Structure formats: C-alpha cells, structure tokens
Amino acid sequence: MNNELKLENQICFPLYAASKEIVRLYTPYLKDIDLTYTQYITMMVMWEVKEINVKELGNKLFLDSGTLTPLLKKLESKGYVERNRLSSDERNLIVKVTEKGLELQDMCKNIPGCVAGCVNITKEEAENLYKTLYKILGNIKED
Amino acid sequence: MNNELKLENQICFPLYAASKEIVRLYTPYLKDIDLTYTQYITMMVMWEVKEINVKELGNKLFLDSGTLTPLLKKLESKGYVERNRLSSDERNLIVKVTEKGLELQDMCKNIPGCVAGCVNITKEEAENLYKTLYKILGNIKED
DNA sequence: CTTTAATTAATTGTATACAATCTAATTATA
DNA sequence: TATAATTAGATTGTATACAATTAATTAAAG
Image (cartoon, rainbow over all chains, first blue to last red):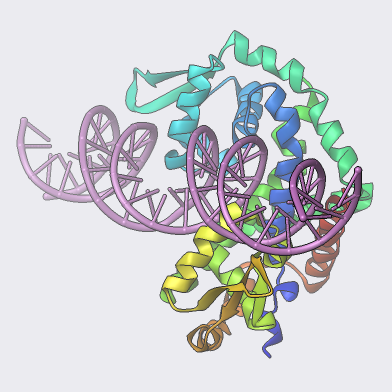
C-alpha cells in the first residue's frame, strides 16, 4: 500500500476538515445575526476598510467574483453594504459599509471568544498554526 | 476598533483560506483523472478499507449523507465504486471499491509529492501543523 | 485616432457542504 | 406483541466555491 496515499498521512486533509469544523462552530452564533461565515468574514473586512472594490476584497478574502457577486448582493439586500460603480472607472464596483452594517460589529464582538473557547489549543500552538498557515498562503499567492 | 474582530487576528480565517488554496493546488492534477478533491479523498479511504458504509465513511471524512449520497452516486457512475444495501440490515448502504477504482490509485501516486512541492514549509512546520490540526479535530469531535 | 489588449465584474455550469426534514428499517420497551 | 424510539440514508433548500466565458470599460499601440 502506498503510504503517501493514506488519508491520515495527508497534510491537506486535516486542514480541510479542521477548516470546515471550525466554520461550523461559528454557525450557531452567526445564525443569531442572520450571517453566514463567508458573509461574516466579508463584513469583517468592511468594518476595517469601510469601502473597497470587489477585486481587492477578493484578494483579501481569497475569493473571486463568482462567489462575491451574489454574496454582496445578499449583504446589500440585508442593508449592510451599498454597491456602486466608481464614476472615474465604471469597471470598478465599490462596496461600502452602511450605518446598519457598522452596527453589526457590536453584536459580533463576543463571537471570536466563544469559538476560541471551543478549540482547546495552547497559545503557543495557536501562534505557530497562525504563522505556518500564513506562510502557506504567502507561498501560494506568489505563483 | 475591536481588534478581536480584525480579519488578520482570526485563526479561523487563514485556516479557511489555506484549506481552499491547497485544495485548489490539487485541482489540475485531479482533473487529469476526472476526480474532484472530495471524490479524491473519498477514494483514498476506499483504497484503504475496500468497503465501508456511508455512516462510517462520513465519520472518517467529516462529511454527512447530504454531501456523500450524490458524490457516491457520481463515483458509482464513473465505475469506481459499487453501492449495495447490507442484507442483514437494509438501512446500511455498503460502498465497495471496484477493480477500476483500485487502478486509479496507481495514477494518483505522484500527486501528493507534486502538491507538497508547491507548499514550501519545513518538515518540522508540517509536523506541528499536523499535530495541532488533529488536536483541534479531536476536541471538536468529542462534543 | 482607431484598433487591440488588458482589466473588472457578472454570468454560467458543476460540485460541494450542511441544516433540516423525511422515509424505511431495526431495536427497545411497555 | 404492538408501539415508541432510534438509526441510516436520501431528499430538499440555501449558500458557497471556482473554472470558464462574457460584457463593458479603459488603456495602449501603431
């Protein structure tokens, strides 16, 4: 048996599974405020930058317009963002957080702590995990 | 600004993004043999166990029947697995790898190495990553 | 100044994911 | 043993993801 093709020897599989499981931990908290996980991380960017075009938003979130276009329309329909073309370059769609969108942030402030409480790893493990994951992301992005 | 709600301070986000990016690295290799990533990890289990019911397969893959049922039907239509009810308990659907499914393994043997070559982390980083991710998965599964 | 190239979103098509519900089969229990 | 509870998959509905293509706009080249 080829050991390299055993599921337990893959690094990608626990990454894939852990990612899904942690996203799932967010679900009940996010349901209270009618956000999905992807909508939540999108709002996280919006709280920070207030306004951004789809391209740059996609770079930050590692998502393309195929995912973002319908998602942003949904956030717009909920009143959390506005979508407008940039007059100086009509190709760009500028997403801008609304007052109502900003108010969401306050309702989310306890969520990271709640989820972190469900994931019992040490501070050191978390820091190393963080570093390695960003190293991976950096490697790939340069391609 | 609440620093806990900054995207860059989340542990879940790089996990989510890195998982997707690595899955994306597999895509071109898997396309050659007409498998998706999820189908690939499913076949990985099948190569190991030869035969398993949907419930246990789901436990191994962290996937439920909503995902697995259509996926297994697709693998069946490609001729890589067979699906049959267990006669002693008709609730159980037994998935069994076919000859053709086993032959796939040989065509996949270089894939892990190819993908690993695209992810430039040290052996030590990979080992720590592996441990931490399984620790997270273990924590969550106990709930 | 016009034709071509490049850029940005949107669209289309396929494949997950997962919660919630449903159905059939089996087990437990009164 | 009749019925309730449990279990295993399948189904339904919603929301991603992403490759590939298209459309509209802008920039660049000749």
